Length: 345
Image 1 (spheres, rainbow, N blue to C red):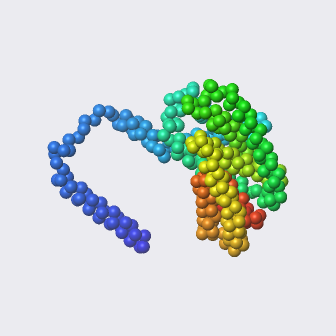
Image 2: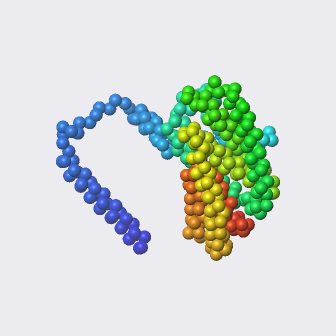
Image 3: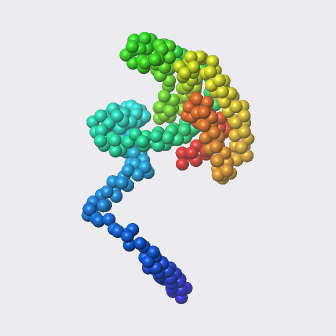
């Protein structure tokens, strides 16, 4: 009996509102002006209309972005698997996949397909999405870093990092001497050109190195911690040098870049002395899996986003800010393991 009443109510409601809509549509036809409602003649069949509609939908930004993501993931996974089979790192295959999908291969031999799949106006959205993924990846790398090793080997890491910068930087400046006449833009002096070449040769691909260390499963060892620390020191040093070079090019003076260097030092100091104790206090209050609720997780994610934003604003790249946000997370292995699970999920 109850089921019958529910069915009758459903049919009655649907019927009543359908009748009301039919009445409104019928009355509304009297509002149409004949002279303004001339139907355009149909110049194509239904199949052509369907094809045109599908072509239009394929160019929708969301559909295009999804197609790009599917293509990138498939090719990257395939190349990563192939390179793993020949004893290389997975990330090397992913880099080759990027070259294949870029103008060096796909754009050169299949320009029309490349233009439809990766139009220039869509690359900004794709880059933005990839940067978000890298921010979370560097956050996890920072959390997996052994802080005790970092604290004990900080001096060695800085020395190794700066030594690894000065050698390729010098080679880049030397290379600039031979290619200045060929590649230097008009109006750019040799000092600015040589410094740009030098810094471009000495910047470490921080996310790539972190990925290799993670694949080798040495990111929690003493060696892995030193490697990651060296890369972080190399990254922030290189970006500070780049800021100095840009200041010299724009203003002809090194002094304006000192503000960026000072802000970078203040940023690192505040992260270690202010943000880190604050997060540690929260972790002591919420140390179990059940107590790590949404408001607590939101605090840590806000720390990540603010740190990445501030570092990008200063000029040392958002990826370093994400790495620092992970590095200053509470040292409790249990807490970090629980939180890394939530980030990876």
